[in-house]
Amino acid sequence: MPFVGTLINFAAILVFSFLGSLVKSGIPERINRAILHAVAVCVIYIGLDGALEPSDAYLDTIFGDTGLTKFVIIIVSLVIGTAIGEAIDIDKWVSKLGAKIEAKLVKGDVPKGDFAKGFVSCTIMTCVGAMAVNGAILDAQGEPSILIAKSVIDAVSCFVMAASLGIGCAFSAFPMLIYQGAITLMALLMSAVMPAASIYYLSVTGSLIIVLIGTNFIGATNVKTANMTPAVFIPLIITPILSMF
Image (cartoon, rainbow, N blue to C red; front, side, top):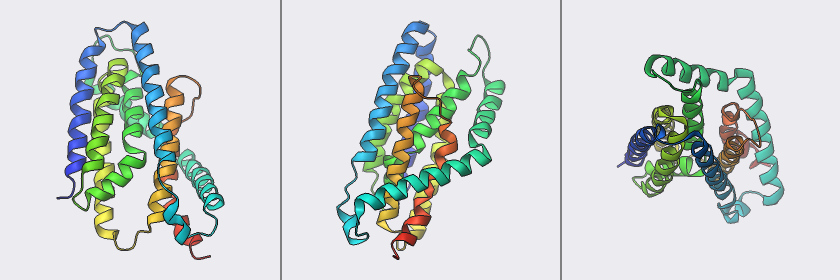
């Protein structure tokens, strides 16, 4: 049955983020920062694992030089996608949305901006990556196993992040529901014509953005990762074009 995996993922993020936000008030700021750094390491690992895990074997039947082609597609996708995201300034609009929700729902002694930061960071972390894309596509075929595994990872990550950033993390469940649900619906409609190579590059590109989320958390970078999200979809356009040559 399609969409089961995404619904499980939605519930896991919502429930564990809420539980993490309850823990937040009882944890000193020093420990909160340490926890956030620990999560950052995990997020970096998830991103690297997603970028390195997929096999190149099936690409031999599509491209002659898989190594060179892989780098070209990923670089072009990141450059074009980031340029589009910066022109639109997705980060600004998503942050504004988080700030509006924060103003309406968050009361009391809450560090300003934590809600929006948690909302944006968790939204990107749970939406962009190999497991989100591949899992949603398999979910269209009635196979939710990847998204169930992703739900466990998201539950732990969002719990710990919510312990540092608060209830904003819970609201990331809703963009994730829309995003993965849309991919599953697209897979249902386009399963016969979507090249496997496009999915591969889409997954790898998204996983590299996940790495930057982790480096942002530890303060090593200050990248607007939301503005890079269009890069995830560029391989759907350029991979079929390159396969013609």
